[in-house]
Image 1 (cartoon, each protein chain N blue to C red):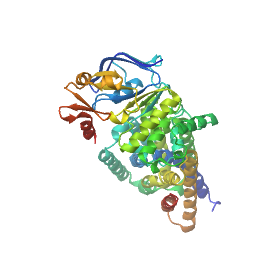
Image 2 (cartoon, chains in turn red, green; image 1 turned 120 degrees about the vertical axis):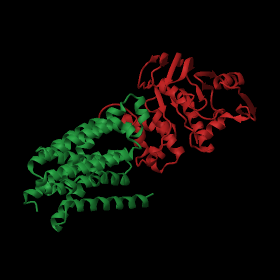
Image 3 (cartoon, rainbow over the protein chains, first blue to last red; image 1 turned 60 degrees about the horizontal axis):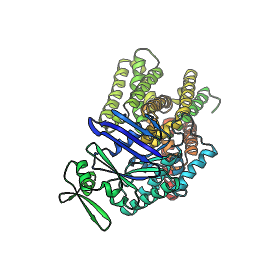
Image 4 (tube, rainbow over the protein chains, first blue to last red; image 1 turned 90 degrees about the vertical axis):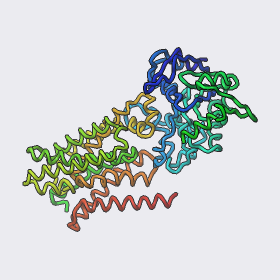
Length: 264
Length: 263
């Protein structure tokens, strides 16, 4: 079944063409890693899918509906901000504010609603965590609550924007494994943006690589090829495969590592 | 002490304002916007003295100016972030303007102290009605706004993705904060609004991590501190505002101790 379709879409963000006449189609039950150099438009793509940015041309269709802002079929986990790190509110209430959060009224939830919240917490194995205030949790633990929040309302397409940022390798692995389990349990499609491909390799079905207004979608072995990436980077790219790991090189420089340093 | 009209008025006015400030303050602390309450009260000082100068009601002037400023702050939203110096300058200018207006309107000299530090023992029946109306309107709007407000406060991007207008929610909330601030000024004055708006909310969040109980607790703490403060002022003949700030600070310190021991 088709979950997401981009039909000759052009999106401009801050006077720059982030997507330039691109098309793609994504099936159900796919774990897709979204990669690309900094500023390639990973976040912009997600915001466009959410309907927060209107395409200048073309059409974005999510589960048969297009041009809809606030589509309940999409779960979204924005890039983590530090603002909530000092929050003295327990995780369960924090997750619950996303349920019907767009409706007017006093935030009273009925029993069914609390069951929905607990189900989302159960999916990410965070029932115990959710009793403690966010201020007392680690980055990885907060990440789990954010994932639970994104799962509220039973979405069928999950957009995760850089969930690995500022996590150490052990916690990175934990988050990827958790997303993989959730995807398998629910049979939904996940778009997971990241800086580096290698941590994602064991988990993803496909990779969506963005760059210079273009994109490539397909299995890792088809997309991570010198000719495809050279087109996306607009520069000659080598791909080095070693011990099951993949390195995207421009000359002698590992571009993903390079990106990471810029970001820090 | 309840045989005196002024004490009855003080306790009723204090009670109404405490409930309003406690509830609004809880959200203010949760949003990390405590500075907004402080800022609005300063701007209100210029409004109140300016109104007095032209022969209008100081309280009316205060409400009009805080409301307008609150809505403007909500409209500007994120663009205000990081502009501490600009905000600080506007606050100083407001207090300065207030002093200038008082200078021209010399017969209102005692009004300065009342505005700056509060005069809960001087509340008349008219003011009581005003405070009741402001509290009812603010709490009613807040009850309608609470759910999207929490969503926007804790997960702005997600809320936006679900179709909530960040700007509209922010403007409405800061209008409520403006009314609560103008009401609080009647009790503790422009300079001490922080004590009533922020103290109870912050204390409640040290004591419970649940949302519902936190809001109830914030209102209860504000009420207890205000009534106890008025009573202590009656007994000791010291200023009410001193007692309320002392209780508010002591409450927060004790709650912090409790919170650090229980983790």
